[in-house]
Length: 99
Image (tube, rainbow, N blue to C red; front, side, top):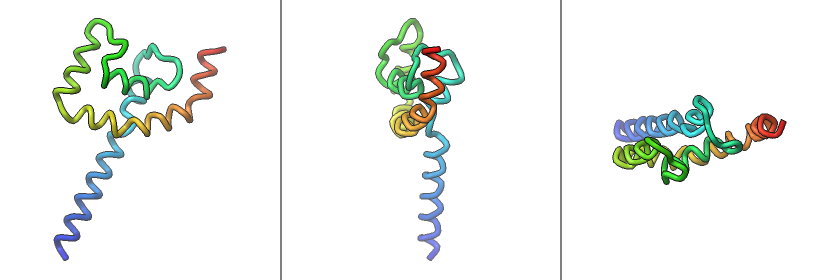
């Protein structure tokens, strides 16, 4: 009985931690200047994982991310959430780009 309670508590803790860390790319892209026009959060996650478009010291962030082991997992887990948030914010981003 006690073991089931511990397993349920641990499962809830892991789920809450995952939800708390989801959307990191969207927060990064919208809190600082992003060079991307549409799907900013998704593009930030992909740039963090692949060094695509990295200039200057931006490549060090990717290297540090891969060395920390947790960062790539968080980026991959938050990618679907970032894509969903970017899809919801697509009209706002398109309006700011094309008008």
